Structures are given as C-alpha cells and as structure tokens.
Amino acid sequence: MKITAINLYQIDLPLHEGRYAWSGGNSVDVFDSTVVEIETDAGITGVGEVCPLGPAYLPAYAEGARAGLEVLAPQLLGQDPTRPMQISHFMDQAMRGHHYVKSPLDVACWDLLGKASGQPVCHLLGGRYGDDVALYRAISQQSPAEMAERCQHYQAEGYTKFQLKVGGDPDTDIERIHACADVMRTGDTLVADANTGWTQHGAMRVVSAVADLDVYIEQPCPTYESCLQVRQSTARPFVLDESIEGLPPLLRALADGAMDVVNIKIAKVGGLTRAHRLRDLCAEAGIAMTLEDTWGGDVVTAAIAHLAHSTPEAMRFSVTDFNSYVTQDFAAGAPRRTAGRLAASTAPGLGVELDHSALGAPFWRTAT
Ligand code: MG
Image 1 (tube, rainbow, N blue to C red):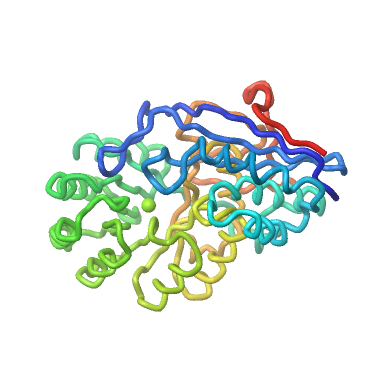
Image 2: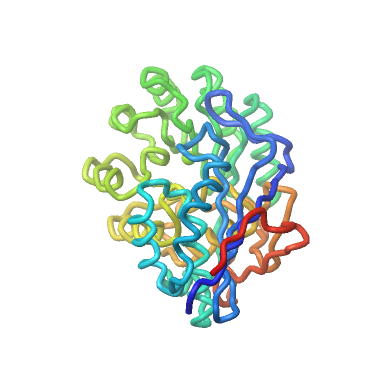
C-alpha cells in the first residue's frame, strides 16, 4: 500500500461549559483542532487529529502543527502506511523533535493498518481489556464552591474520577481541594492537578495542608527537580505529566521513584507508536497511567479509547473523553461516553468516518 495524498482540515471546537481554565490564569474558549486524512492507492483512508491545549501549555500550538504538517506530509507520499513504526522512525529522521506535529500522521497510519488488516487499533496495540474504561472529568478552575458543584454535577452523570485544575494561589487551591474532597463518595478518585502552576514552596504548603485527604497530587511545579522535592515531602500519591515528554525523562523518573502514576498524552509523545511503547514500559514497571491527549474531538477521543482499552485494567488510572467537552462533532462512529465510561470501537482501524460536511474543504493538500 502507498500513500497517494494527505489532506489537512481545520475545525473549531467550542466548549459546552464555555471556557476551560487551568493554572497560571490560562484559559481556552474555543479549541483549534487539525485533522489529517491520508489517502492510499488501496482506496482506503486513515485519519488523525492534533489539538494543542492552546500555546501556553506545552511547547506546541495549532498554527505550528499545521506549519509542521505542511513540511512533513509531502515526504510521506509513496510510503507504506501499514508500517507505522517505520513511518515514525522516518519522521524522526526527517524532522527533529516536534512530537505533536507527527502525532496525527502516526495515528492515521495505525488507522490504515487496522483497516487493511481488518482489526480494531486496540487489538494491534495489545488487546481489549474489560468491557469499557472508566473516565475522569477535568474540573475547570473556578471558585472552591463552583468546583465542588461541578464535581457533584458530573457524579450525577456517572463519573467517579475527578481532576481538579489547581495551580493557582496556594491558599485558594487548598480551599478548592478541601471543598471537592468534601463531596467525594466512597470509591471516587480525586486528583489535584497543578499543571506546573505552583512554586516549590507553594506546593510544599499545599501538600502539607491536604495531608489528611485522600487526594493525588499531579505535576505541582514546572521543573522535574522541584516536583521530585515535593514528591519526597508528601505521602500523597504522586502523578507526573508535563515533565514526561518521552523516554529519557520517563526512564529517569522510574529510576528516581519520582511518581506513582504517569500521564501519557498521545500528541505529547508523538502518536500511538510512542504512546503504546511508553505504556508497555510503565505497565511492566507497575506504574499506572492516565491515558489521554492534550485536547481534541472525535478522532483524538477514538485514539485514546483504543490506547486505553488495550491497557491492562490495573494499569489504567484514568482516561478522558474530550469529545464530550466540546459542542462540535465531526466523525461518525466516534466513541461516546455512557455513565462515565467509554469503549473502543470494534470496527477495523479507529472505527471513525469523517463528516466532511462538518469539516468543510481541506485547507491544504499534497498528492502524488
Ligand atoms: Mg495533567
């Protein structure tokens, strides 16, 4: 099979809640997503999606994804997309770094391998563990009372895992964590995710003020070294996210015992090829994972579902379904949550079909 053309689409994804706010006063009202469609000489197409959490989160931004794709995509024409690991290797030779640019191309190749072999992507990544996967809900940064109300709202929709966006003023964050811990039920999971927003001394104050609560602490500070200091000063279970952008930082963190859970985002690490490689390493090491992406819509959510569903249940700490946060659908067959849970499609590939009426015409195309 050979790649004959690659189309790029841009789509705006507004939020049901109007705004998503996290650490450092950052917020997004409308997500800017880029969808990749790979055409082949076999007459089948593969799809991928990349949607950075705005330019202020990781070193990634929507216009950068599109600029990078316009450089990389023409070099994939004529290549066999049913060898996604070889394509991933090729992309690393053709462009240094820029994992998020490569991610939608890599995901589209896994979609094509699945369609060509008649297998859902989760089978290609390792299997299908359980009937479905439990989702977490991110609680946008608001007042303590509003965040506790949002937790209860999503409890009523079936969610049992809640990730609070903290990383603001430490005193207010202590109130946020206490207010939300007060509404947790037996069996619920509460994570306080600072998204790098605290100074080391601020983080030390927060972890001691919540020492008696059943709460996980996620990525308190910008640097790995500060996170490690905080980790070593608290008995609360600890999650690393932004510091773990690939294999070298993961190996260091595993050797240092720097976390109990790690957050693997598909675009952050460069696609499903790397995400499942890191996933398998963490599972072998006994480190559970949050499996997700930076943001996205139907195609990102499908890719997350396949990665999560192919992960042993004990190693699946939490998973999210971004397409339920946004008002715009653009793919038939995308997984939809039921009572706080999600299942990967059983159809070949990712199991999604682009809705071209929602996406409009491609803004860019390369072809043989
Ligand atoms: Mg996080």
